Image (tube, rainbow, N blue to C red; front, side, top):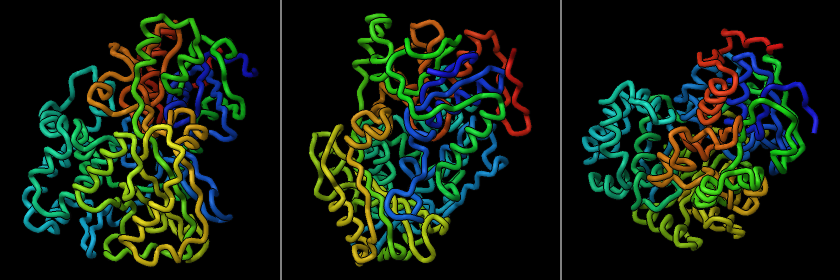
Length: 493
């Protein structure tokens, strides 16, 4: 394999692998990134999946965590030409009969539309939304140091460590309860389990604080900006060659792996200590997704007009229906009426499709490793809240959970979170170690979403792993400036 003359090798070019590489390059380290796919980005890619001219995000599509992330805040996406577009409605949750709950940037405007739940919503989300930046900073850290705002974290933890269904008892209206269920289901777990309320609270608070933006032109623009920054710092990305063993890597002082714990075991073989290897083998992967991308002849004809202004629309009906769907998935079943997450980029980015036409991004949760095509059930759920949707479909592309795992090996069994977000695995990913990014192998670090702070396009897993490698291997303890104005350090030597 090529790439000699580099001080560090990063395996995998998802947002975390690239964040690790950019952080190292900013400290003057010569970095080589190896990617098995034909193009970099992992789940942060945009492709013509259905018809020519229709641009679909391959996995990640909406990016509140990119705006909340300390790494991307310093990296400066806007200054690097990446435009994050904000829909008027961050996300919506329609119900049968044409009613819907709509989440706006304003807590007050959102609460005012929830009738008798106005005060309950304001009391729950208002304090967290005001302190969402401080909460996100700690949640998106390695969670090993005291928070800079303990009161904010305490307010978040009061509800965040609970189950979504227990917190939902404070709501009375179907709209508020459905809204809460729809955002809690991003956890990909039964809503009766903690910390599903934490997922719902944080994501909703971020909708009010930073929004749920889409990237103009597609999520691959984030990848392109990171690759450009890495190249400017003397780094290089090589694609199209899968790494099968750590022994195959070019010599380097540090190796950072944007891979799943399962892949780490395969790459390292018998070089891992038995206890650590067994801990990685016990790491639990969650539900998979069946993803369906649609090319449409027009916008989705939602019955509720507010849904037509939303970037994201959660489908599944009442809280009880969503909870039942997620529980069925956890029991190994494929729901007839699944919870469906949809994104309609054309609301803010009409350039994703030919003039007057649209794309629709969607997935539903399925048992891990599922080979079942859920496209017809997804279409039925959209049609339920948007009669006439079927007639708009020009083409569709399906990726089952098993196919998602083939497309991106970090999605073990189709789990796009690279590990279940259980309470234990929220704090101990992938094992119970004080420094989870360090492996027992000298100079080898894990930097995927299987490490803190977990899933999402935030780059923090990579940035934290890179800072550990800089301190351990290169003796650099100052935090590198990855910003566009803090010129990347020239490669050493």
